[in-house]
Length: 108
Ligand SMILES: [Zn+2]
Image 1 (tube, rainbow, N blue to C red):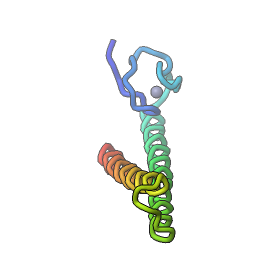
Image 2: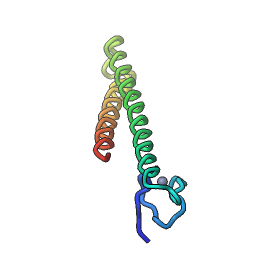
Image 3: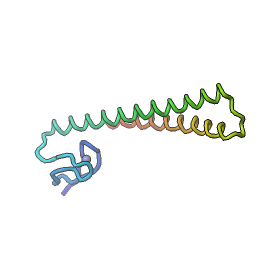
Image 4: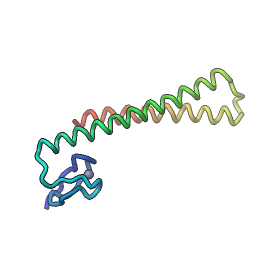
């Protein structure tokens, strides 16, 4: 028994299994072409998910920045703490997603 990578979820599964034990993708009876097409589709799905996540993260950061810029909340207030945290987290999440996108591209 050998371990192969499932083309759909990219996790390791047995080459003897009829379907992936993680995502139930049917492996038995698939041609090489079908498998590589499914791999491409899976990478495209992942890319789209990462893109929409990074857009959401950027939106959060922009909203927090706009709030700080326009309302200028007092530094000790809860509003300031929350908006600065959101700004930081939004930017961090955005950066993490960009790095994951780059790594996703390199896997190809
Ligand atoms: Zn799978």
